[in-house]
Amino acid sequence: MQALRIQQGEIEHNQRLLAGQKTEDQIDCCKIIYMIYDGTYFHKAGCMLNLMNAQDQKIISHIYVKKESFKDSYPWFLNLKKQGLNPRFISTDGERSIVRQ
Image 1: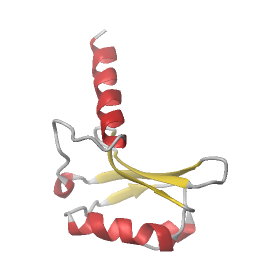
Image 2 (image 1 turned 90 degrees about the vertical axis):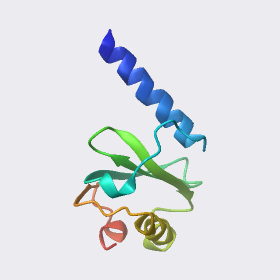
Image 3 (image 1 turned 30 degrees about the vertical axis):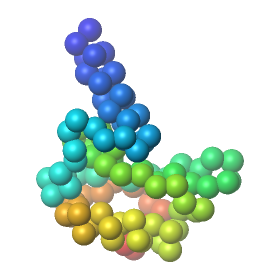
């Protein structure tokens, strides 16, 4: 039962973050070591790019772009880097345009 409450809390945290609301525990980008990146397409009308902290499964950041490309994602990554994001490892599905960043 406790695991279910923890999972529900993480879901609510991620929903608030995706809705653009502030969360009670703001993310310290400098502490993130392991990250998961993935893009999700919605009927070819656009792509949601997501970054997740692999250690606590919380969304770090997300953007909605035309397609999963270097051109569309680079400014996003650059902004996150300015905020202190510098992970050691990133897991991804191997999208070539993202890997070169």
